[in-house]
Image (cartoon, rainbow, N blue to C red; front, side, top):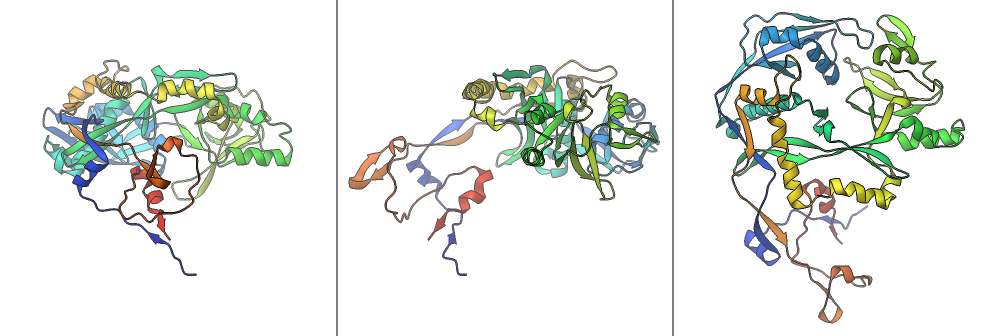
Length: 436
């Protein structure tokens, strides 16, 4: 079948031509400069974990690091992990094996074994601009500083302020709103900057069990299928950990009484497991289970089961989006005026200079001083373009405003000179414009 569709390439225009349709102005950019106040020496120590836990399961590695931190600090001083390596400012020629007893998935003991330092890295101010590896080290250090902040909770690339969470609710909707940030390095023609973006997290206050119980006759197979279709691929959070999962399925033929697995060498059901591991008592022992499909370190599929009573959906339901009052209340925290957005973004700097800390650990301010890293707003000015008002020409050369256009398009016009503006994430959609 022949196609009469021609895909458009990216338009090539002269910057001067933009003056006809845009105004050029200096704008605020959420880019921050990184200053290294002293020569920074970092040593990389690869480690292996026995029994193996797999590269994908960072949660277990993070727990191992947390529980063995005191032992590790005695050897490496202040340190942090990223991937399968530990990073420290101290050179240790003969690292020791660190044994940490931690009970997860029925395994009684994990061993962390460290090799001799593999990479010695000296980082200077100028290295941030020209050396990709130095830039990666700086990214890891900033994340380590942020993780020492007691006010933050981490969800993959997003860190939210747990002390500033807000409950937003109406008669039909109730959610917890967490303001937060994401960070990344951005390469520009003026150098590398730390990009700080506002990123929020929304968790339903209603549990998934309450959500399921809204349906009538949940024992009916048709109703069960509707529930499964509604919840598959939805993100959810458990109440006893700072982690999100994706629902693979809802299992109605099993419940906390019947689902068993091996825990610390014994076969127990979910009722006993939650009581022993999390000090939680399951109220509804006949509720269905949430299934999350994953793979083990050898690539074999494994199934994880969760109790809906202790889980809440992330994001907004359709009912919430249709609730005008709720959306107006939510907009007070998400639809910020430019000045407020700038102020909120600049609050990020306070997270790096916080003086609160846990026992035997350094505060964010102390860690920033230890690494000799300062983050500050960029002193450079950036240029942006503001589109001028678009004119629409109707029949008889009549000019109409876009908001007044209620009439249908009766005839297409072949335009020779035109531009398409779009967000960078929507390039594929923009490219789908066609000429027939």
